[in-house]
Image (cartoon, rainbow, N blue to C red; front, side):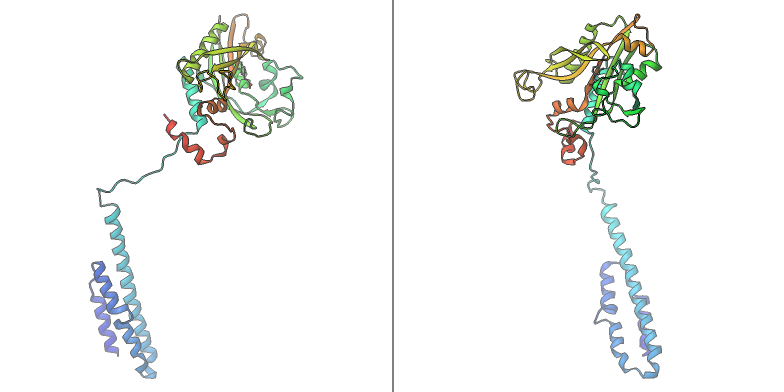
Length: 339
Ligand code: DAH
């Protein structure tokens, strides 16, 4: 029995395995049910009782040797198999990486900014947590204006609130710099509204400010007409309706001719042929004075538009909530719109 074990050990050690077929042969010869090791175990019952302990240990050692030689070789064979398949076949197509896309609001914001950048506007930003002065008082909001109400504004404490519009950035810009100004101020704003398809407690705006000597209402009209044509198409017309904002005088609301039905009338423009896209006006001299700018020398215009509103019109999205839900089925549809 001892000799048999010794012989088998030699055989196992000398067995050359270089490929999968040889590994399988090794397994059949030594490790399988009908292999030599199992035969040894079968004959173990004939070993004398006093030798059982020693012989048993030897057989176990032998089995471990055989199994570990087989396992190690098998592993290295399968590693080199993989290597051949994935790295050495240069005719295989490359790995495919799923690509992401820009958010529709990002795409819209970038198109707005780039249209104005082409006529010399630069981009400025300000904080989302604002004090009363920058969000309201400097912009000429009277003490009892309803926008200052808790119902519209998220107050943090009696000094600070989440900004309700990006007009606050106008104030910071004018306070900290010298005219002329030709700036755009994109950003997120907050209002205390019940969330629905048409309203949300946060959304995004782009504010515009143009201040220089001798700026007139006609300059504003021409600038906004240029923007509208670039954004919605060469045939776009604009109209200005009188309105009221505390920080502009005169103030207007601007409509563009409906680019969905070519102003023929559809449910987007409610059969009027016009869609409202922004508020605008000549900056009130009181606001210029509040920001330390001489209103006898300088004048200018401001405007503000909602990015969601423009994206909804452009992409015909009918529920505001879709923009912040991050549903990939929605977001994926804008991949093609990335420039
Ligand atoms: N701040 C206004 C709002 O949130 C939008 C606006 C209107 C901005 C007229 C302006 C402006 O700069 O001139 O509704």
